[in-house]
Length: 203
Image (cartoon, rainbow, N blue to C red; front, side, top):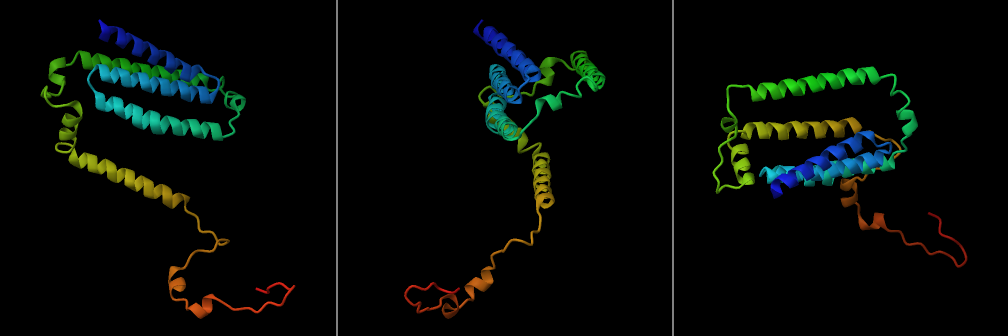
């Protein structure tokens, strides 16, 4: 009974916060609604026993992605009226895309429910004594090890590409030359000046 009430509570808040994310006129409020949706989605994951996914939602999405969105939205000077100016112009295209996505979801759910495999056969067998995180790690680092390493390599290449694309050579800056600094002699680094009283020092 408690699990059913918790499910309807979390699911209702997720739907309400998702609607608030879309319908909110203020971008900052939209990000705050999105954070609330992530928190309650994590609660739903806990109900089904996927505590690892719940922690990912809280740590990665709430702690990093949503906060980054919030800071970017707050720092940028966004003209909301200008963003909404072309809403009517592209409303038809948006409706067509939404209808296409909805049709894909309906087809996927129908194919999943009417397939030859039963629900019990789709669920990966996991021993009761093994926690969810340990079972996921055993599968990830054994069967899908090369896929996991490949994903890390793709992210590394993307990070290097972003650094290369944003790196610029500037001629108006002075760079540090460590070799010349270490080879400099003490008599070249200091200079004794006998400055007269009341006069400045000429550099």
